[in-house]
Image (cartoon, rainbow, N blue to C red; front, side, top):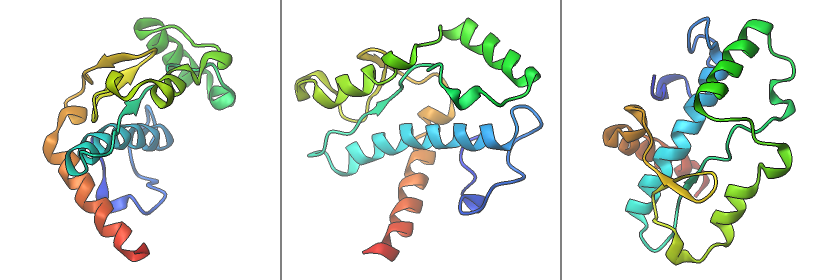
Length: 146
């Protein structure tokens, strides 16, 4: 899917399809932006160490009020890719990234739990043109605050 820049400043009510639906499409879009922006920040400001960090599939109340059908899809997805991470362990990867020696990090990289440098496996997460477009869009939006 990528990032729908035309509707980013709206509720994006028409984003996505029935499955996973617009709220999950917005969520995925935001996670994609996290990955891409970390890469671009590292490229544009090499003196800053910027990484994207995946916390894992945390068993939080985020999934408490979803439909049975969506819950089953999610359970299958988690089963196929990873196991649920207990809430208590949710911050481990972020804490590692924030406190490890700078020499343990590669700026612009993506880390999965815990401390595993990983290449994202989606086309969009590796799309340099999309990353550049996100950077340009964000810079334009930030000019209103400078």
